[in-house]
Image 1 (cartoon, helix red, strand yellow):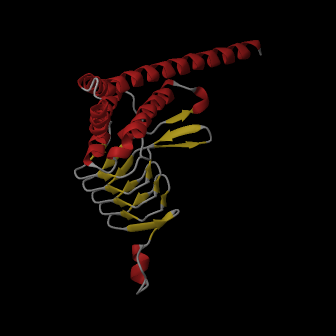
Image 2 (cartoon, helix red, strand yellow):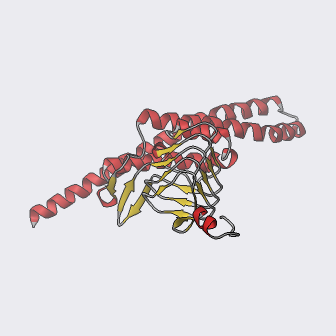
Length: 257
């Protein structure tokens, strides 16, 4: 019993040190990333303050006009610095993993640091650029394997390195796509693969391990359960999804979802 108790204390102490290290490193990295993005903005504001010294009206006008473009500069630098830092440090979501939260092992903590970096960009930059080619470029730089002309109009997308989208994929607003799920205290991961010309409708939820064939359409507000295989050229709807385009053919006059 004494030996078991000693092992338990040692395990908890080890987990505590791992957690402390993960928190300190992620805070340090994010502080540097945000500082790099803010540096040119602060330099520009300092220059404006010097130029408008003693002219309060001009200062108000100059700072007002500079706010939007300087924020855009901050956003672009933040996305690039964050994505490059996670690449350099090897922070990513492990593929096809099962990580017990109670263990607080290194793979889990590395995944947590990657998710924190993603979240910082979502909060500080995402609303400005989501759905644009700039957001697609950031997702690629952060690890996603995306084809040409891919548009992701959602911030509820994560585990970028586990996402594989073909050409001309469109992800609607508020779609949730992640390469991880949590079941009974275990974080499980698996890739999400969407073929060419796949459309995911507004507000849908796509679970882990999904494979959708070319030209597949997922209707709005649908739920795709984990490890589902969706056929090419088919239309799916519902929670959970079912194929609906064949039903429309069997029932003349029915409206497809």
